[in-house]
Length: 295
Image (cartoon, rainbow, N blue to C red):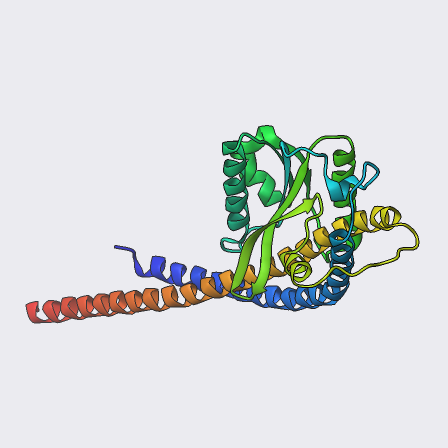
């Protein structure tokens, strides 16, 4: 049975831990607000870009000179998975959920006889996937969005992937990340980025309505050559923003739960301490009374 001193030390340690988790919760809440604002600001541009490309692609007739980012390589054998996590932990199941989704996609592709390559963003993705997928990892990016997610960081990742694509290193690129839905919900999501795929809504719209006739200046090929790489970078940028917001939301929730658990543990330890102290006092009184009677 622990002594009174041990219980006092335990209570003090748990209280100090609760101070830390409470402070981390407040910091995460502050960062979450900024990350949400940044993601909301970037959404309209990304949606308009996606809409323009959807209308172009829906009416486009592919030729031998068409951009490969749109038409693909003609094969579906080598898949590059871009797995996005954070660099730090203490965020509940945020990172493990993204990695679990990546492993699920890997198993599915391997079952279909495909070759899989991995490119990771975030130290946690590298550490978790290196245990069983080290031979498939081709590149890792760390320190992305350490202070604030910048478009130049997403553009750097996009340029590296496009260079690999043009070199024939893969046929299909899919990004796997935690899509931010709310403070308590981050949804693991896998989205194909290369070749460009029409959104489901655009396909439904085209099937319901007659296709409009457009005249382009410059040509469709030139417009697509310019817009597709930029849209690719914007999609990665949006995923990084979602992931950053989701990370702070998950950390805030995890630290809130840790603070509540620390408070409950403090109450239980205090109750044990009071009972042990009362027992010690009672024992001393019994000893004093017994000694007095013996005299």
